[in-house]
Length: 452
Ligand SMILES: *Cc1c(COP(=O)(O)O)cnc(C)c1O
Image (cartoon, rainbow, N blue to C red; front, side, top):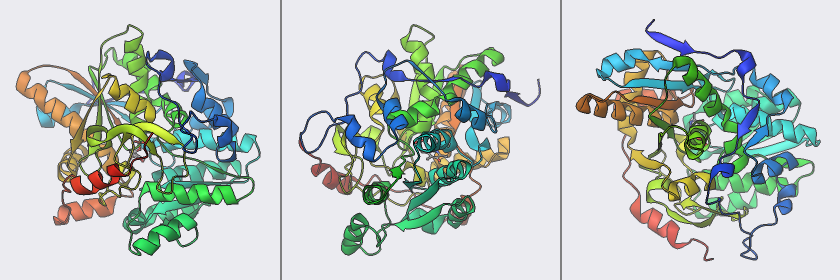
């Protein structure tokens, strides 16, 4: 066998269906709640914000949901994504572990985000939407949605978190290349943005603020809908192509993971990889450990509270039951901008609550140290977000070295870091730092949780 074996499926083997974990959960994920009544939300009320297709996918309890043919045809451009055995990394770590990773950086935007962007743009095209608005952290979601909208001829407006807007100018250029419009958030163009700027004109921004701005524009606009890049059930659903493919690829490799690892921001790439494996286990299949990894600077799963909270700062979203740090928590400006969200997807929160997965945090400097080792071994420049998964996977492999155990470790390499070189420059210059867990700020944000 060569050093790097790439388990690629035939195009014909691209999954025809998304997998819905809800069907296999004994305790269902609590529904969103209407903040004005404190009762479960009448989901049709959300039709002014989301496409009809997204709302159907959000609420279904069907185990398998068919991927529309036009969406599958577009995904053929980069799917199936490769599953790699990281043999050189195994050698460098001198570990008996078998390390596998699935590489989502091969998509047009360079991350898994395109999987959901195409599906969401398609549903909007189907119902005649002319324009969509969205938020973006590091810019991957904004690039993915801009590109998907360019395929379907839909206008795309992106509110980009201020600190990422300053850190990642090439992401902005990429969104504009695909025809998107990019506004740094908080902006002076919305009430939500103006309110934040009035308190702090230099606010570094958060996904919660950018979401408020994007939704506000939808409520004021015509033929305009909102798209969210993570957190919601339908986004997690779209990402399950990753895990569904991986299951088939492990058959080709004649192996099966003992542990599946993913980096968690809002949770979509992690769920997309892990839920199909967890589903097999819940239906009586092989045992597998599921591990989510988050930044110490924004530890929703490990330090958050399981409670109903808003998804945004201006309280425009329904309340969602999730592990949360409080919707007005503004995380430190870590370079993994895609992981700076105050909450965790309700389905992942529910799975974690039931003890079906575990979670841990990693520090920025450890993440970059391991990203560099990985890049030198495997020749792929990972995104800082994905590197959280890499670092945890390497820690698992290091444990195997100590114990002599040969476990199969699978992680999701959610995207490449070609637009994140400024972060690597800072790392090599020694100016990158760790952020302590912002205990006081989180305590303050949590004290403002809505009472239900
Ligand atoms: C957005 C992003 C993440 C975090 O978002 P999730 O919804 O948690 O997946 C992780 N990695 C990359 C490369 C991203 O673009």
